Length: 130
Image (cartoon, rainbow, N blue to C red):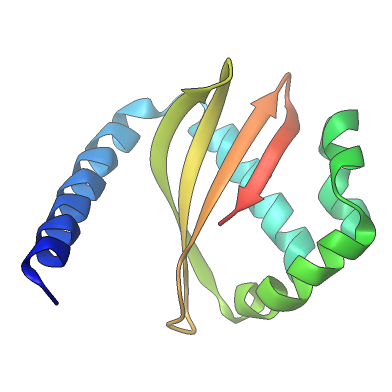
């Protein structure tokens, strides 16, 4: 690893630690967001498109086809079933919406995923896995 990569890695670790401190202070939406996140991930694990879109706004439900959902669920679902942990990293404002950020770490030891979640009026307005 060259010097620049090491510096970037150290900077990332420091940023992650700082975000962890902010995440504990963020709190208010955390319980509702965690419940929504776990419901969405359970639907992905079970490859159940209807359960995935049920808690969402009409726009959310219309945004992902069953085929698109199935493509993601086939890859991520088995990893979720093996076990995972979800760590709330904090919140950010984006395009006028409050977005919660989550780190998903899998028991299979593979790559982590970043999940972003937006709740609008008690309904899921957006959810992305990266």
